[in-house]
Length: 202
Image 1 (tube, rainbow, N blue to C red):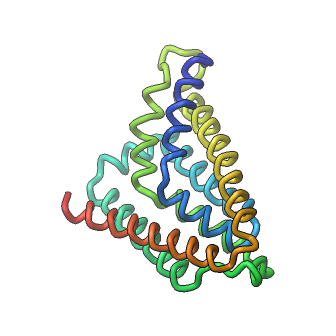
Image 2 (cartoon, helix red, strand yellow):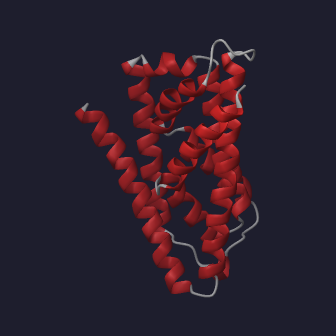
């Protein structure tokens, strides 16, 4: 597979990751509540699942079925709204973070945030095939896998830095931490509502 194709995709992927969205809001909220690694691991695992779906050709089937895509959009929007409302209602308190057993819970929430995002699936469907070459010695599914790995690695590094920075800066500022937590919750709620409204209108 051509290195130039991977680098070109990586540049676009970095720009997409750097744009604030549901992943940002989740990472910031998770960074305020506890260790960042489970949250980032969950996001990356969700994108791994999306990559596998696209590589297997299932993604195109979902995108071509209004009923399936509509169901995924509703599930993703409702999940983001639920997560956003609970984050807004119970913002992080630096003094009570790191409760036992929260790592797996945070990981699973991260999988839901990235894996249930229909916009993420559609972005992968639109982008990944553009950087593959059917005439290449590698199968298209393998090329998509490599591009997905590039996206996941960039996602992991970027969000780990974002969550760590959030945790470090706001660690000794409980009032600012609560405000930031409520903001991230409101952002996820708004994004979930936007998904639902966009689905209804289209």
